[in-house]
Image 1 (spheres, rainbow, N blue to C red):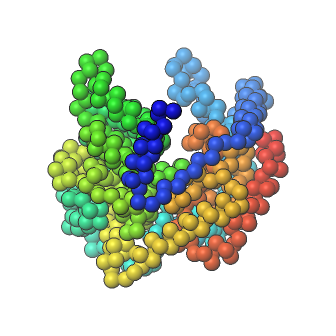
Image 2: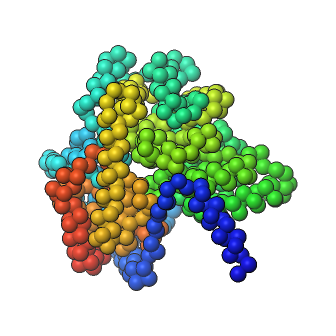
Image 3: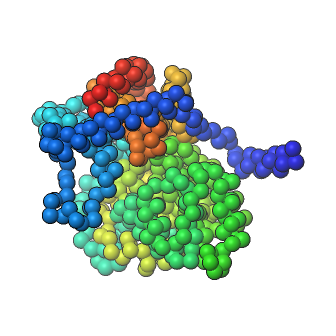
Length: 511
């Protein structure tokens, strides 16, 4: 019992860092469900090998791309298992993804109807449109993805003035006054000295991390970080070590080891230690334990890179992200990154921080030096939506949308829990993963929901662990309570999952 006083002290310190309860849940997969899920994948794998055998002897038509006969002695271009998984498992449920949309992706949307006569190898458009599908999959957190209103009107005027394309990079002849205005506004919104915008959110991470770290530097990355962060870390040539998701003990151990042991072989001190985390993790619905991360960062003199792609505009009383949500000082975060593709209904990304940091990136970031400038109407969409969120448009529309998003998130999560569903993440996260587990449920759930005019995102292996397939709902301020209650979405979900057990065996037989 000698460790109990120390543990109590650590828990007390942690509680002092938070100004309100931090509630997250990740229920472990029930043993029976895990066994049935593995059995399901086993059955699908057996049938897959059987079909491959039939294809090999031309008993069944082979529609998959294969290496040419004259290349048989070459190193294979594709990995065997990836190909196997794609043609035998993914292909059977491929109709749940890449559905063409022919309207604004707002609270409701229109889908182009399509059918497949060869088990999803090819699709044929019927010429019909599925109208008024409730959109539960887009990252339209504040409802700014719309073609009417102040944002749309401002973007139209900007198009008339500047056109759509810039035709140059920022450092040549592509730096417009509207870009300067946008960056100044972003810096003011974040509460930092300066900011810089980029035309692509993914490239904001993948092209800027290599400019900040290099050989002799250490990157400590959360195990659930986005692919753009992973790619940026790998391109930087830095040493990468991964800590368990939101686990401060794991992060602190890596920090201590880094300080004590230094670089491998030489044991020289690391040039830089960069902690990389996200605000909201898009597949888990969890929120970073930012107060604890900042405390560790200060204690061990490391730098902090915060990706707020999903949290900016969606969290905090003022919509300023996870820093605002916890009531922290933006100056405690060294590199504040985010995207305009979600809450602002636009495109691109930004990095904010000290003026010296931004000036350095303007001269060293590949995304800044070689990428074409952001389209003017996109920049205007960002400016207008951000001013609405800040209340600088003279209305309370921004505050109303922030409040509506929070209420919708709480209501949706509470209803799902009351019905007995297993959902992941933080109580305040508008990303709501609902666990499906079994492989056949992935396809069946997406299809059954679409039959009831509800568009959802279903996710499975390899995007998630093999026994943690899920449906992911993204809540929006544009989702009115009346809309959700009118379609009885919660009763539909309940009914859909009841019939999925029946569909499970039928789906696996069809595989």
